[in-house]
Length: 197
Image (cartoon, rainbow, N blue to C red):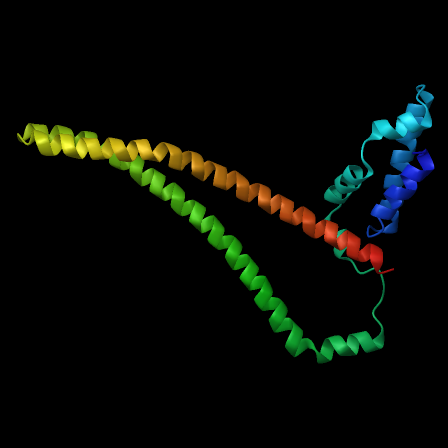
């Protein structure tokens, strides 16, 4: 792939970005290619050393603030404004309900993870309390009951370990899912704006 082909493909993937940001990115990568060519690489080697155009475009999109992607690229016509106003009683409740449902599902996911941490904490505290219960039962002469409570506490303490690992994985998975979802929304905005010129 030549330098110009690389820049053309990158430009195509960044069509949804504001023109100034797209041009800045293209100039930056053009200069990087020129520097590599000056260092003795052929044009094809320099392009290959840059990596995948898709990865570069995703990186640029990820670093672009969402406000720039949400700004309209064109002015609405009078008919479009009139339709937005007339349809307001229909589209606003639907949009609001969709947003509320999405946020609620996201919050429920975090509440479930929080509940898992509460269960882990209660298992750990039960294990610690079972030691005190053992000592108290031995002091009053009820060794069998004390050892039973202690055994149950140790089982709960043992169960807290895999639950804690699971809670940690669920937390990091949810964090990754949030970042990935946000990135997909940004990419969709760029693609949508790239097609509506």
